[in-house]
Image (tube, rainbow, N blue to C red; front, side):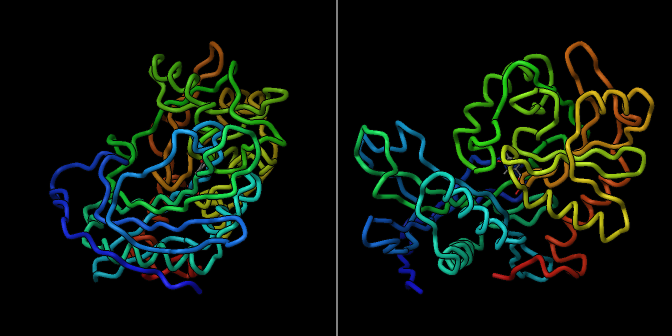
Length: 355
Ligand SMILES: *Cc1c(COP(=O)(O)O)cnc(C)c1O
């Protein structure tokens, strides 16, 4: 494996005050990881360096054709001072799945894992410890060829930056209101919906703004062809508890395969709760909401972990889920996942990796 060179900052920044709330994604630590790719040479020069601005030609391909991949995971500090990552192997696997779809060269898994561990270790003092906080890890790759033609780039830069974060939703586990989008679509089968890449997010912004103006915090996407089947929320997968069974849209090529989604499915199954991964139509949901069979709805993602949904709006109908509060299973999933992440609950599944 390539050796990671380390250059420490001579000018450390102040670490945020423990008692000030952290706004998601606004503060970055002292160091970052960087590695370059050159056609013919492969990935080379892995290094940890002070967090710095980039110098790229304005013609760099990422600016014009969006060839980029990103990931998101978190590091937690346990009460006894250990640093835990949650299922980082799944993020690395998914990164290379995205890379293949986006024609970005794959990153060797061993160097990827080592890079995460070492950069987190160097900035360990930045891991916040207050309830609901963590160190968000953002690995990403950009295409850097200075070229205005359409083809995969010959050169890339892989970076990992770190950001101490508080609760994703300042209101905490309060149920969110969700807008089922019937005009725009995020992705279609055969497109790039199952890759974690910026292009999927820019496709979602117009709808997101519309939903915000109407007082909704997130958009729930329908399939891009029939606009009939539920796909996922902005940066979360979606789950429904209908008549005691947990139902989530099956992975169909346009949905992002969430690590938290996988975790929810595996936990529910381990508790004996039936889980179905299948097509879920908006009609089925409306019917279930009307008859009272729709017991719980929640979103799952690294940022918020579990996000209970209190309201769904589709066209002119608004339906409230349960009593509008947090469902029992949503709460149990949240407590279990965060408990394992923080080392408070025994990790029977071997999901955590110590740094
Ligand atoms: C990252 C992401 C998710 C959630 O994935 P996790 O691995 O659970 O964080 C869901 N949907 C989209 C579109 C995403 O980008």
